[in-house]
Image (cartoon, rainbow, N blue to C red; front, side, top):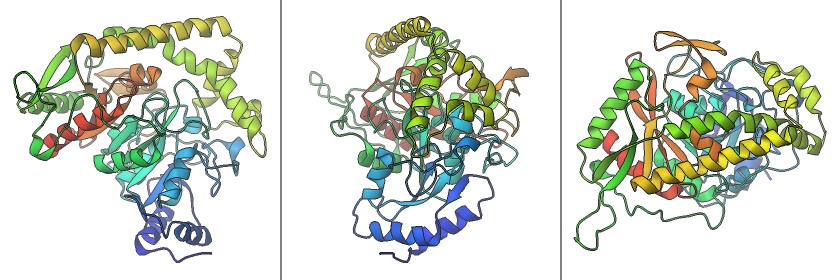
Length: 461
């Protein structure tokens, strides 16, 4: 049975077909749209009847999953990824598959099988990556939300660069598998959306049964920035929400581009003056030191093994060597070759995972020793780079390597599976969006949401 799509769904499909920013790789046809609309007709949820998009490394049976790499052109997986299946059951309406940095192996969403995606705020700039198409689709108003994936900042970086909301769940909170993988230790599906409430609505539908629903801070009311935290039983007065802020000379804050620095200072000034919020200086450099010692190495070892297994299980199998030989982005063939070279480095991998265990302990200590609910930081040290700056870009008055500079602030939390949520703070001096991120304890995503609601209410108020 098919059904004529309603006006909102039809408009989203039409806009995706006319997309001027290169956000989409594929868009549903009329017959498929009718079947999707018919299947959702009786659904009741906050997203029922709402159009949305899916990053093209997340499995869908209705459209190919190509990961923007030539060897997977036309590849149809056997089943929908779990988040896709749950959204379909809730009545969300698939518009299409969004562009990404090839195989999610980068941070710019540059050209590969299809042309580069461009930032809706400035088409000469990158939307970020690897989920750049999802962020551009939301920021341009084509869809209200889009699924993303995140291995090292791939959901939160493009959300920040495009001026929208991005969420990386704690590892295990959302269904795993069903994606073109880089790293089983680090990969998770997430979401990019036009509002914080919509992020929370999607999370409530997608998260696994038993995921936390209360948090540990208390109840946060974000009306006009007023915070109502859990009552202090002894004093009978509200206890302030303690938000960790990196020390000024920490790697999270030094260096920052001028426009990011100005937005960060403005945010800190606003929060400092807000009732019910206490900013707590926190030492964080150990997080960066340990991440640099293990994060990328873990991904390189796991990519060859995890990607090979995914490719072999496809209804029409593809080899890792085929993907490597046909890779189209300028930076990806070398990364695939490096990953292949680490395939048998078992002892080195065991050492990397031991360092990761130390990083997990260091994150726990940041929260426990300072009694904080979340750690607040700039999402990225710089705003959106020019399209084509795949290897190097200008920042801090010099030429810097693009990838490590952009993921400097997102790496430590993604390596250990911390939840992270980025909020837009406004436009910097060059007219480009800037974001701030809240990192939470592993498994305590709902505290992140609660604090984010208070901060977002304050910043928007």
